[in-house]
Image 1 (spheres, rainbow, N blue to C red):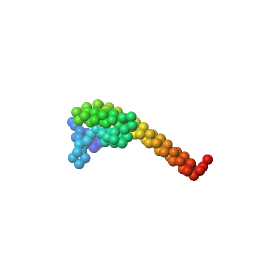
Image 2 (image 1 turned 45 degrees about the vertical axis):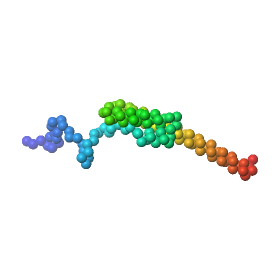
Image 3 (image 1 turned 90 degrees about the vertical axis):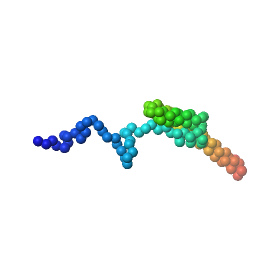
Image 4 (image 1 turned 180 degrees about the vertical axis):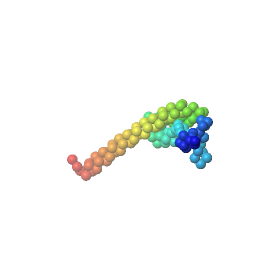
Length: 118
């Protein structure tokens, strides 16, 4: 009596070959991100309250931990870098919006005065 194909285990030794795509191995858990480029952008262009510098510090720490093999440490530092990058972006955008609103209101007041309005 033969077993149906569904009942025969494909892998009887508990070994699962690594997943590959065009020869490159990858796992189901992606490596932790370090956000270095985003931190550099925030450091040079949106460094409100030095949040970009803090984000760059934690990004470099995350990259160092990733190189050493400490995945959990890299994930923690990467999360801190991500949060600081988000905070730097939000604070900088709010400051830019306030500046634009102030400049627009001043320009409106100046044009109102130039045309002799009351």
